[in-house]
Image (cartoon, rainbow, N blue to C red; front, side, top):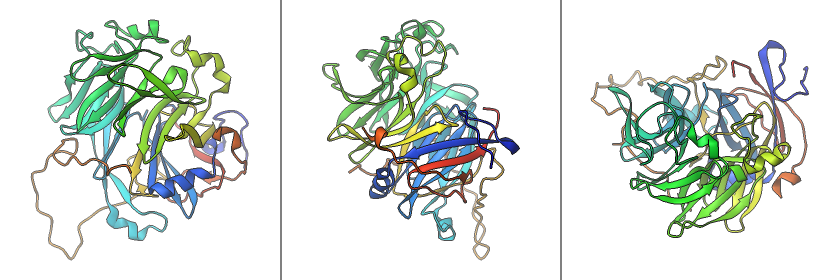
Amino acid sequence: MQKSTSDGGTFKDGLLEVRYEYSPRLPVILQQLNATLLVTTYQAGKLMVLGTHGGQLHISFLDYDQPMGLAVSPLRIALGSRRQIHFFVPAHETQSRQQFHDGCFVPRSAFYTGTIHGHELGWGRDGCWIVNTLFSCLSTLHDDYSFVPRWRPPFVTELIDQDRCHLNGLALEDGRPKYVTAMGQTDSAQGWRLNKATGGSVLEVPSGQVICDNLAMPHSPRLHGGQLWVLDSGHGTLNRLDVSSGKHEIVERLPGYTRGLSFCGQFAFVGLSKIRETSVFGGIPIADRRDELRCGIGVVELISGNTVAVFQFHSGVSEIFAVEVLAGFSNPLFAGASVNQQDQEVWIVPNPSSSLPQIEKRLPLFYGRTFSELPPESGAFDSLSLQTSTIHDSTHSAATLVERGNLLQEQGNQ
């Protein structure tokens, strides 16, 4: 097999090399948590499912058009792409036929929003909440509209597709929006770009009160363990924030642009990205060490504040967008509405021996009546071992590696 030495090099038959490595402790942690990681990469156009089987990591990719935000619950999963929100539902009755999988999620519907740059999604009491970055607001969905604006920062004076403050992150409390992140307190088209190194802030919802400011391109506010956490992305850090004082402390400094955060047990899973050679990232603190930045996932142990495991891409993927923990499954199968025709098909039909299902009036998947939260959550980069193998991009045939991987994926228009 011919290999490319360049990052994201092209192969014959339109395949793209994706090389990665990970700490031996990573599959151990995921197995102990009985959890799977769902990761989106906008740049490569992939939803990555990172589970474990037989003590090894099991990785599969599904193709989506510019995937961004993810919302995860045991009953349904939402994935935001360029112009649509895709909804997956459980079909675990199929798992008995799957040798390597302990659950199954299948695509059931998609809602067309048009381009809104849905940076984050969350399941709340009113259904699927969307951080609508292009229109600088929080939105929900309704059958009669592209989206329903529900809240916007008080300094944004109109609903318009101008990305005025780069609203990008959402923390929910009891199923309701509680905190958001924005890159600037600005009210002009992409006005946040002028002061991105220090203009970022965390705001309370619905008051719009600024809880913390002077951040560099912050992302991913989260409530966990009674505390508010945020990624100060331009510094490459995971921070803990005191809401009453507005002060924040660095818990861990990581070698990447931090974006995408999820908690499970005593661990934080943090997305890491390289930064592009564009004006978007010019002037932020980590731009000075651009060549040292890495793309992948860092696992931070919260008691010590140390990075204890890592998954790192070496080629094919350079940016991570969302990172979410799917608890209760070690290696679920995700089937198809991706554009990759090699994905495994799963059909769910009534049992022929049963009576035909009755047509019932049901609320759409994006509505909140069936809202169910996840169950209560009860120097690694330099120690990676290097072993090489090859896997193919397929949700049903991907081999797993102990510590290093090399995979071929479909190369589309990315």
